[in-house]
Length: 235
Image (cartoon, rainbow, N blue to C red; front, top):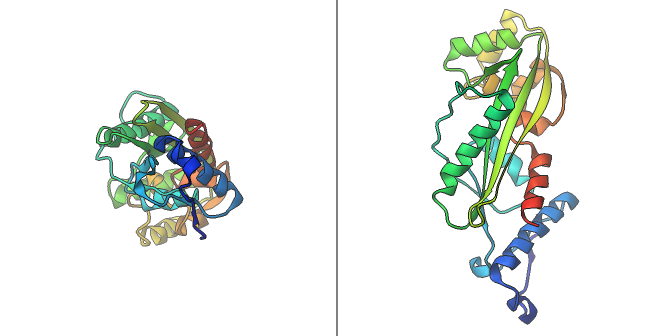
């Protein structure tokens, strides 16, 4: 990755620090579309807002890196409640917003991103399995069926108070799985900690016939939709 250093000339010095930082973030997003490196500030005093991913998920961290934006991660500490009386899309957006707000309350000037992924099968929300037995049950239910993966994401500009939350859906077609296949997959350890008890980016890929929609949405962060909203919030 090639880092482009932006010199601080006299003309730039007349531009407010925060505005220059915002311009850098916008340029980073444009560069990500071209596949080139992101623009790095020379010093931390340029007013560039810090981007924080309110998640401890290594999968979301890897996806966000693809935008070539400098960011840090911070676990929100928010405990998900899948029992809330909300429709699936609203639930995903609500949980994402709660995670983002938990981190935003600890910051004065940052852009915070929160996300939450749920699996919906025949109108029923499947979260992360509680144990091996629960994971096996989820995989049996998904076998031979079509389910929807919904990832809600929220972006908060802490200084301005602007908030945006969206939800993206992807349809996933599971193959018919026999007991041996489920047992073999259970041995990989992947089902634990994953919504729906599988990881499409890992061994779980062999369980899937096809998908309709954003692949990264199933992994945990809809990259295209997120980039679009970041562009808008930085305008």
